Length: 260
Image 1 (cartoon, rainbow, N blue to C red):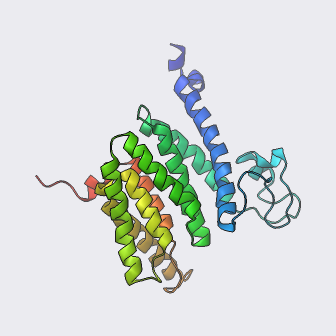
Image 2 (image 1 turned 30 degrees about the vertical axis):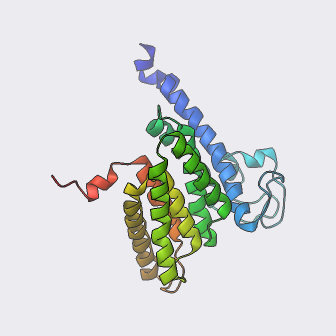
Image 3 (image 1 turned 90 degrees about the horizontal axis):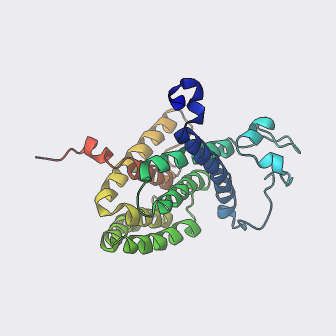
């Protein structure tokens, strides 16, 4: 067959579909960049044109092409010459990669579009908390409530309720005991994660997030890029851990094998 010839591999239907998904994901990543920039600042999401955060230069269509515009502009604003944050091409590329991964992971799954939107929300949360040390309610609350409706539709409302209450409850108790070390944004985020992942996976999400946060903090402290008093964007690590469990659900068994 012609598709078995390596010279025609690019015309294979699976490659074409994955390429299309990747391009759609790039566009989604571009929109995520808008959310990441505007939500913490309380700006409108879809009613104003994108602009340079330094000089206010409104971006043309050619300056809004995901990845390619960054390369064409050599990572600088065309108007003022200030450097464009590497976060922009990184989020765009991440959007493309995870969209393809989502299709592979959830193909044939009931309500799979919800998991794609959840994935995008986790990316948004991760970068917002990393940059601003906050987790906007405008992201977590709609996905928490929407998750309850989605799980009720799937017949898993009880598991979702327990997961949300357990996840939010654990961090809420920590926040009460140590208010300077844990924010309510983290509480709402883990409650949201618990709704989708269920109570069984909440403890592993906490374990993995804490492990990653500790490792990164020790590395940054060791290289003197942060001090012990600097806040840690724990929501970023919760989002990463939730993403890992969402896409690799068998991973907990590698750390905690079942006892026979």
